[in-house]
Image (cartoon, rainbow, N blue to C red; front, side, top):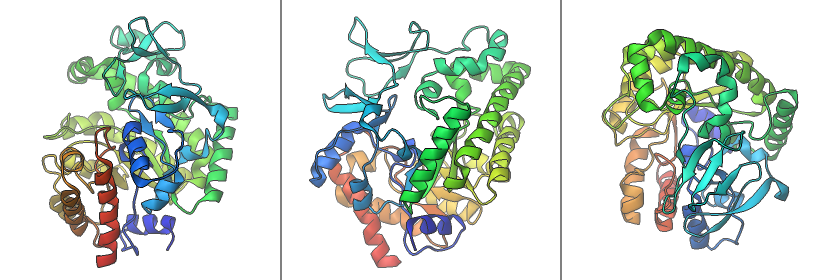
Length: 418
């Protein structure tokens, strides 16, 4: 059974030959560049330039030698692109580690020594990283003022949002025939080069993107007090998404196995909104987008990234057509592995939850990491419907020995149980 078969077998609720493993096929399964540099050194691997593909979170592209070392079964579509030296430029991480970032990312230091990202006008600051920070913070919210008057400008304002401007596909290429041809060519080459399952990230956020555009406080108040405005705004947003999903799937659909959308609905204690609000504003629109994806490729698997406690929303997500959920934040209320497996067995694939990244991975011993992995695999793996990853991206301060212990624990569990 090759990697692609292993992933898809599990996602079809059948037992694969081994637990399928993800490391880096999406931002939440990846690793911060600072930790990645230390991991390579710890493993004794050759020195390589650290390539940072997600500037706000400063996540690294995981090289093939690390993927092979940890028996990783999944890769992200973006690995088919930016493979020439000319696609990258030098930068430096907060701890002084030299790295490379995409040449098209416009980041510079201001007079106060802060790294800043500007919008296309080269004047509007949209994100900042101050000394001592290991992330960028969003600083500009296009719809924070006069949202009703700007709805028709939504598509052009994507370029003034930190997330949609810097980390969304197709990168520096446009949503036009030339840009889609570029995506299709890279996706085809990647498919021909690997038997790993390929995840195509579109994103398609409709809840979280409201926070990014309105600002959290404005967004929550508008959802409660101005539903007509939110419906108008969401209709415009989804019309843009549908147009782009159509183009995206035509370009890369033949070459990907999993389509990934992203929308963070959860907190530590429960959803950020009620199930009733989810059903009114968001469920029918997710269904519309996921139906389009599956009309383009009926056998594709649709996965959504949503952090936090989303137990109360999972039945509606499943009903809307969701096949897998990530990152399975098992340390949140009502998200215990036993509960999830019991409630949703054979209804949805749990992609994650393999190791606690809030407490165990950064602060535990290697043996405690191993015990956490074994405990979670014992619950999640039987009868399929599971892909292993740590709960969220590996942070800058996680000891490399714990990362190695985590993946080695999966290999050990496989030998004992599969």
